[in-house]
Length: 288
Image 1 (spheres, rainbow, N blue to C red):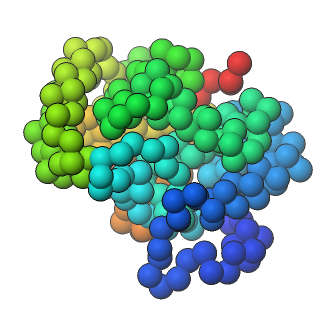
Image 2 (cartoon, one colour):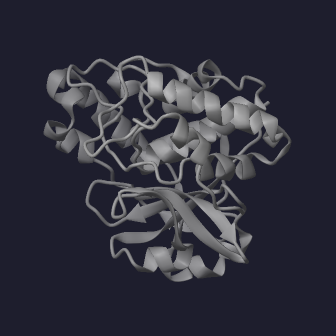
């Protein structure tokens, strides 16, 4: 896979980032511009004919250097809107962006509006935007719901994965950390019920000690969800499989590096983070 920055885009928006970055405005003007430029490039180079995982990596390459930021989806009032912000990303919004850009392109809607349609379809339970509880907050829930609707396929068990017992509870036990739950405490019991549903499902993971044995089976753009030993949570990080010269590296929004980058090989990366206990692997499916 090639590694390159989208220099033309950055030159076209010289004021996109300053020493103190400000978030995109409510209408997503900057993000609209970036997505439109990315789609034009993808169309000009015929990316739609490539496998969806490769397309995800191509879009990920265009996002190299994007600043790391959290909370870009949140509202202090608790109002749930389908927000997107390409001026800053965390690990989830980066993976979501690459998946939804690729799906929009390959669905024949290579526009900002087509991209937003895909974000709504993948971000919310059953693809329906409702209140804050309709968002698929837990990665395990996001994987399960999107697999059920044909967006992706969880291939962890096929790779030799082992059962993963989850006991998620962090959101309902710590509503003070979520502006929407502070603003609308009546949603906390709904979140708790969703957590119970997640815990009742069957889950799979590759233990960290055996991750190195399955990396040769990964394909470009496979979604890697890193399981965590942190109490009440399911996963601690997300990224994409990114092959370079026979090794599978991690393409992700890095909290430590504060930007999107291509990191070390996956087995080395997971060994460097004590709280990561393994990985779950999902493969995006071609949109129909």
